Length: 116
Image (tube, rainbow, N blue to C red; front, side, top):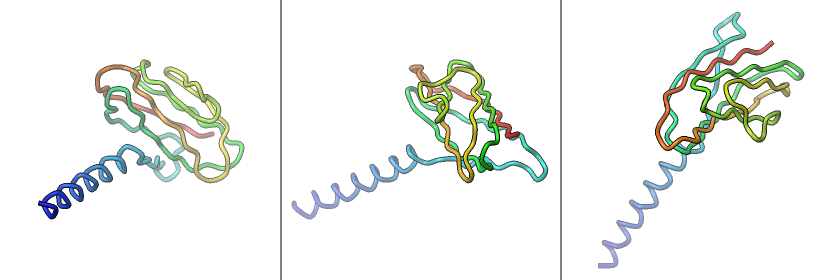
C-alpha cells in the first residue's frame, strides 16, 4: 500500500514539474541575418502569460505589436500592460517582455517585434 502511494506521489510531482516548466518557459526571439524585425505566432491559453526574450544593445528601441488587440503587452516600460502595441528602451543583453491573455478562452496571436 505504501509503495503504491509513493509511486502515485512521484507521478504527481513529475507531472506538476513538467507543466510548471512549460508555464514559466521563455521563447527566444531570433532575427534573420541582416533583419531587425521578426514575426511569431502561437496560442495563449485563457488567463495566461507567454514570455519572450530578445537580445539587444543598450538604448535601442524595441517595438512590439500584437494582434488581436485584446492581449496585453508587458515590459519594464509597461508594467501595467498596453494593448496592441508597446515601445520600450532596451538594456544590453537579454530583454524580457510578455503577453497576457485576459479573456476566458485561448487566443491565437501574431506578434511582430522590431529593434532600432
